[in-house]
Image (cartoon, rainbow, N blue to C red; front, top):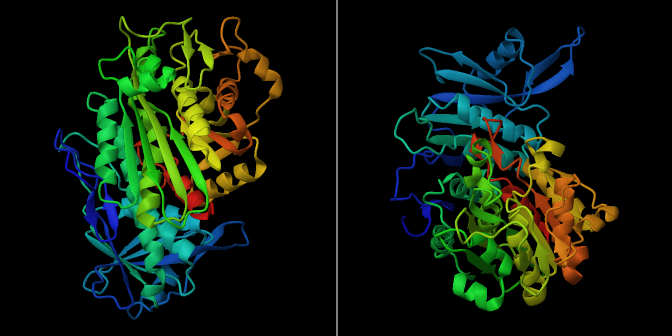
Amino acid sequence: MAQGLQRCGQVAFPPVRDTFLEVRFRVLAIRLIAEPDRLDVLVLPVRSADSTADGETSAEPVSTAVAGPDGTTDEAVALASAARLTGRAGEIHTQLRPGRTPGRLLLLGIGDGGEAAWRAAGAALARSASAETHITIALPAEVTPAAVRGLTEGLLLAPYRFRLTEAGDRPALTGVDLLLDDPTGYEDTVATARTTAAMTHLARDLTNTPSSVKTPQWFADQVASAAADLPDLRLRVRGPAELATEGFGGILAVGGGSASGPRLVELDWHPANARTHVVLIGKGITFDTGGISIKPVASMKLMRKDMAGAAAVVAATLGAAALRLPVRITTLTPLAENMVSGSAFRPGDVIRHYGGTTSETTNSDAEGRLVLADALAYAVQQLKPDLLLDLATLTGANSVALGKRTAALYSENDELAASVLAAAEAAGESAWRMPLHTDYVEYLGSEIADLYSAPTQGAGSVLAALYLREFTGDLRDRWLHLDMSAPSWADGDQAEVSRGATGWGVRSLLRWLADVN
């Protein structure tokens, strides 16, 4: 793999691997301009207007900051009516104009004009205009930075593809101009959106990579490579010998059945002006067979995604460093392959975690909580942060309860939960707060250990969260857990989300970290 991050302007894109062929996306150059110098395709926004007398929603063109060529505004008004456009976010109508400038006029629905609507519009435009090489978008006169951020993220995120073959069409679109009356006023906004998209792509790449390549050591190497070009980042990687010496029994048990030994990556972003210390923990099971409690084939096929939490927290930390966010972040990613062999841990084994707490496990497919328990205990006892968050593809019960697009959020801290939920909503990622029922705690009782790791009484996501809570010590009231198994993977394209790994959590974390101080 090429060392470092490939650069494009102010945004760092994930490196291209030289171990296999990756066809992901062409770099999309976005310019902020006040005077159009290329008008092959002009995009004019239309918004949803009041319903008509028969109850149908109509669309009306938006006054733009910079006027388009003569006639295009009147043409847009006529087209919106003739085509019966609704103006919903992402709706697109194309008008050919042979022999005129622009040669094609696109009307782009922006819904209510909010950030989410602009993000959906940008994603739809990137997909529908993929055969074009260049487009110019005339933005509204009073466009907000949030709208520009949403549009930019949608444009950059939607074209993502991860393929291991040269077959298939690649988007031709390589350039987008945003037409504004004051381009300099939006430069920071676009730079933030670029970095957010780049780090989401990185998390998607890490998660999509086949597990034949993605061993724990490989993942650690990717973190080292990506962090090399960013100042004020410190990295430590513990191998099996160090993990054994320091007592990380959960990580060692889960990784013990694999020929590729486990790792614990500790990445620290420590700017001089930081007042708050946040620890982010991400589950990093680089492949999950279920161990001796082996999964059926259908459930095992996509288990390369079982480290999506680790990918998200690493990418968010790198993004925070790139954006120079004034918050200290220590990221822990316990990495292991949960494999079947003579050295695999067994159902019924008692595991001694970091700090001495013991767990009885009767299901080796409930392995994620075992590695997270070690990382949580270490963070509490050694790092002593102000806030503690973990992200994990932890349970299938997440999707049973909330469907395939929404993460389950657990915390006893109302303020912390509200702030993370608000960040997720602003970022366009869905999460829902779930209960931590105290009367379920009795299910964690074991006759031979401190805890029983995998109760079977139901409420699987809730019980997993209650188990993790046992390792938060005096940070229990400053801890938050996100079970993001369901939204970490998409079966098809949806707005800015592309099929495959979604990079869920990167955008939410970067929004939240920007305001945490």
